[in-house]
Image (cartoon, rainbow, N blue to C red; front, side):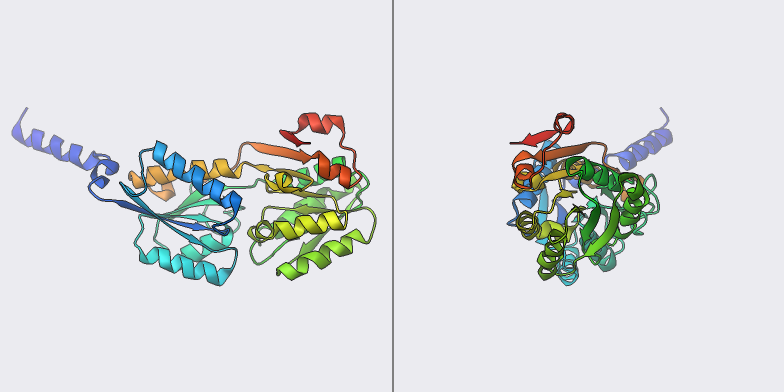
Length: 328
């Protein structure tokens, strides 16, 4: 081989050498901005799954990667402060959980590579150009798809057929993406002979009165989509729905294990595992803009029979058979 050709070939090989191999000369840094308190059992489980998957992929916190955690429970100012703290640490990428936190990271540093998780409608919210081609420095995992709203209504009517009026509870400040979702539910309401309205709650103190008002009239039910605010205040919601005997279906799949009637939604712990996969690829040289946003492909339906009995509901056997988990 001619000397010039050999040098050219060698130079090309060095340039193509995996970024991860070169990155081993230094400790990579990951920032994680979580949308729930560090003491929350579900948040602990999600972060544990993320850490475990990273280790499987060869990234050990304290050895070849440093992971910095911050927590902002759906409060915009907390999110902005936490985002600034993480960006100041010069991370190689940030994992952002929740719409509020993702917006805070993007507004703090529009250039940092970001993997988001549990974000609804990332295109309509303006975070990415499209699911297939994000087109910027953000990519990750969406927690919804267009048919979820009508499916919640259908399941609520199956488990509580007497329901004639449905309220969709959410905080428009932390979950603006739910506003158009309510319209998809309204669009099919006539098929189930129900009326649909929004129950917007911006403060924890608003939750109890809203549910109490539903409980004062017969035939009332509630849909609670995945929202960082309602998730953080789920105990208040669960206690109020039990006290005022309001049947509700939830977008968080863990709610029935804590006493909720029923849930239908994606596996959020699995989303954090997949976020570790995207984190690995970016640490090894990939760009967020080249990684498509993924929508959930597996949805779980979970029913709590004890809660149904307390509400005076008889769960049809066909619905129990279709459920992924039935809690006795």
